[in-house]
Length: 564
Image (cartoon, rainbow, N blue to C red):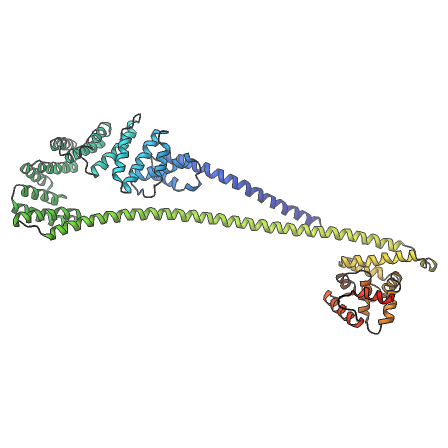
């Protein structure tokens, strides 16, 4: 008993421990997630300028839906978009960058500018280049911003201005960028962007002046590739200002220095063809254009961009020669433009698809994590239910055992009293009160055993019944029981046997006298050694033999007959 009680206490202890652990774990996990996520985001911010890939890896492990505070949420969104910008990755998935930029506006100039740059780049990715340029203009003109921040905004502003073929609007930004850049290579890039601005603005003399500076600088620093490219750029500018012969001389010089089979030979012959066309030499123009077409295919394969220019020049030469325009050239030119546009859209679609796949993978991982959490919670819940059920069983069993112990103690007390009672003389037994008390005690013992029919109680009842009689293997001495019933209930059994002894068998008489003493069907089945279903069958048989109506109690019916 003590062992089972200890087991019960142990199970209850586990149950309480699990409930407390779950509660504390849930609270701790929620607070820990927020604190840990914020720590990861801060670490990503520290790494962003050193190693953007590592920073983005840290951010990828953060679940945006778990970020409840606006400040942490804005910081995460801003850093994610800024990292994509630094690595030149797709920004299709960074639509929330506008939220971060609005949050930092007027609060934190560094994050305001950087989130603004990322927002502008997002607009460019989604096709709103004018909106991106407008936003960058406002960022570049902000006061109180460090040069290092302003340079970042200016670089992208100038880059987008060149991409949009801006002229005059681009020049002041390119000049400002050139002034702020400290790295020599960055300054050269800024100077080249300024040259492009002058070219698009048709300030060609200023453009030629800058290209001469760049050619001299590349020559002094022995930048062979840069020197080659800058001379090609100058040849094109000379053509633009109508100095075709100077352009041809410079192209011949480039061929002499770089060889007739250099990587840009097709473009150089193409420039020769334009110069020849400008001077009216159609034969030379056709010759150089054919050479350019042949070299372009050999050097670069089927290059759609080159063919779009080449087809246009073929159309002009044909028109000059024949005075008519061929539809095939116009259609070819248009098809090349369509092809280029479709490729651009396909590239954008692939980028969007990649972003969506990345988001899908993130959602799948999140869903899998939540599924595992649910499974764990279900397992814990089932465990708690099982433990609770086990505790309930143990408590119920313990309660029943306590009740049984109390009954056994009471039964033992009654037995002890019965055993200690001195043998009554004939004169004493005639006293009705003493006789009745003794019989009630014995009948009470029988009923107690019937209520709690353990093997220990059964054996005790057999011993009591065999004190002054024979049980013949049964629990009680039925002759004594019949005598008790007759003495307690005015000769009930004697009258029953006299009237129905021929009809009723012994088992049926036993059932009737126990019913008279107030025993239940279950208790009768214990004392008579029969199943409860057998007792029900015998009761039905008794009704038929005695002629008891269906709805009338058997004992009441017999008592009424005795009274009659």
